Image (cartoon, rainbow, N blue to C red):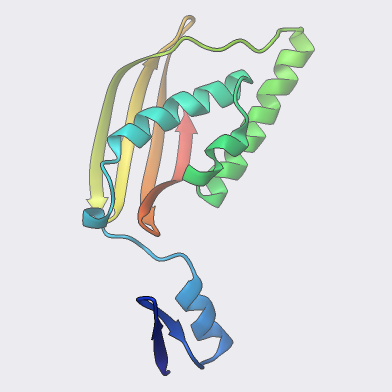
Length: 145
């Protein structure tokens, strides 16, 4: 497939539709090309807790979530909103404090993290798997325990 160079961007000149789609599809990123994941781990944890409390819209986190993690969070947020509505409880900004965070790197461009968060009622754990896509971290899996 012939390539032409325009403003340092290689654009396929001809090829099959599959080759073109693969060229413009999301690309995996190496860990060395990605920023430190710890700030995202902490901020995403607080953001998820705020979404479930009903004080943040899940769309505000969409940029950092993979498709499956996004859908799971939307479902869980809807269930939380229904539960609050049934009890007649208003959404209140939670006061959480991060107690600890643990990360491991099982493969290049992948970080798995667990964050322990203390809330006013109970202590919770948020587990996530971050993968490097297009030069940034995205949560491909997210679990609130």
